[in-house]
Length: 262
Image (cartoon, rainbow, N blue to C red; front, side):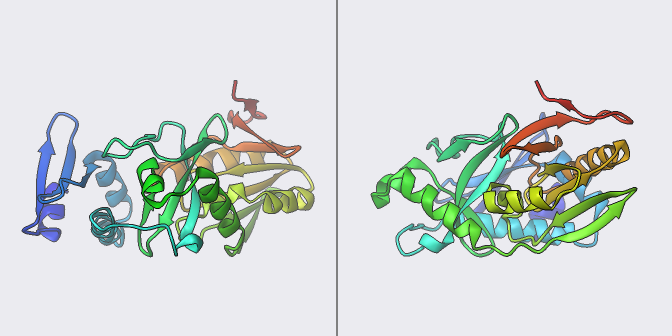
């Protein structure tokens, strides 16, 4: 995997280094010293699961990310390109340059960060960028929530053993973010005839589940874990129960009803 990446990304302005102890690979611009670190074990697992397309997508992602981090970005005039992104609570709250990323608490399993969309990539917004632009945090958050509500919501539906599952997978980078669209959650709660559960296993999928029996919980648990393991940006393998406008993380035990995450 290391050799394949180096061969595809060979550039005179990029430096590659390898940490054998934790099997990570660093790609860095020799002029700006900015770059990214890849976990080769995780990449190899995902590549073996989907050799047809994963490697090409990975290379494109690296190229776009390196390009974005080495270009000057501006917020002014790009208000419609600001969106919230959902991440796990273990996601770093500082950029590689040591600047604090703008973020908020969401649930016990998830946090909200804010991104400037750059087309095929994005930049997470940090305090340094806000200071340069003279923006307040409230401006970022207001723009992000407004733009989120403008995104399409096209759900694919499937029924298993009397339980209905709805999938949102547009691959626009903000599928999981739509869990912050409160009117969407309320409309799904009104539509559900059983118990509404929601899952955001990785960045590019949002799952709604209208649960009517134990089989429904089992299917949701297995599905969420599978998506979590295969996602490029994993978030959480725990689904949520949606009740009274609140999201409650749950453990799903095989053949049993879920237990709330304490």
